[in-house]
Image (cartoon, rainbow, N blue to C red; front, side, top):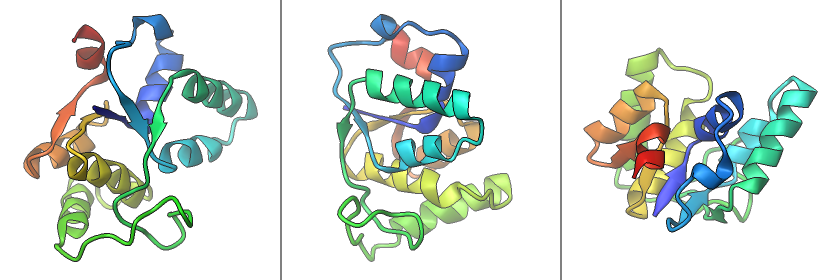
Length: 147
């Protein structure tokens, strides 16, 4: 099972990766966060192309494992656990990339992958290092295609 980060859809579009080149025998997942991030793309043409890629890549939707005020959607997020995993992941990512604005979104995706024993597919080096540091499974898009 694989959780696709938003970077995957950007790279598929930007690099002209054919969708039939993606492994079809794998279960692919996304949360509400990925399409929400795509919706925030300011360029109308690019946003529409990314939304098309997102809809063309057959993903199953799963609720995020935690909720973040002003990010999470009602009915698309779980209350979360009080075990500190979300906070630890967010703290690590914040230290790596100096508190980027979308870190809580990235961690919602990453934590959900970790809690559901999915491999996160991302080309975000800081997010990848964060997931690795917290014993999650993570690969790049190219590694995913090569599997």
